[in-house]
Image 1: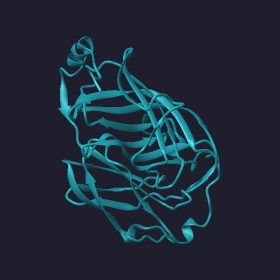
Image 2: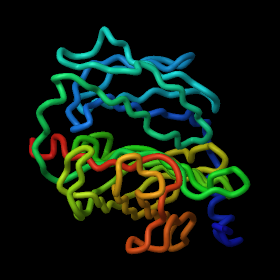
Image 3: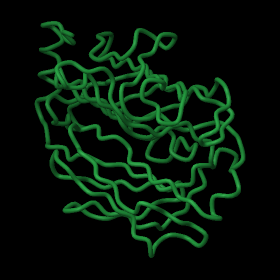
Length: 272
């Protein structure tokens, strides 16, 4: 896909006049299948660092380069009534939008489901493939804990592997939660629509905040099945002004089916 005209390329060149290297951010979530989570669980990635989960069970850890990593949860930090097996997962970071790593807790901590309400989103994976390379990689969180204030509405990353374009949605607004109930975790909706602003970069470099032009986007994610490959769906349209620079799916009514990964709708904290 030719994502920019000659005129837009000139505009984008101005946007990229001041750049800085960007590490890959791996998002890890440690929670029960019913979405119950606790803060203070220690998560570590080999040769990278450690972080504690927040109230939503989310920890973010930067890694310095593409490659293979081991993500582990410290069993001594698990809350009372929680069990976890396995304690470690091997992951491969192949783009600036690594998928969310999910650890499913067990035990008595997970016996009581959270109350229903509006929704928020975690997810990661790929869309389509050509000659062994995904067309797109995506990953991130939208409205963590149902809060528009947490991380300014979230962070949603998408990489177009054929153009080298990397999009980061950094100011996100959820427009609606709709659809049908699903059971993993148990929620009353399975569709989230959102829009906002962000930044774009070429080949893994980010636009300096002082020099970037406005980038707007709109998106929809549909959680059709746990283990969403071949079932969950995503739509995303990113624009510089009126120029579309990235698009996944034809429209919100005709999104693309993800090839690998998962999109998961949550409702914890939505009524708090």
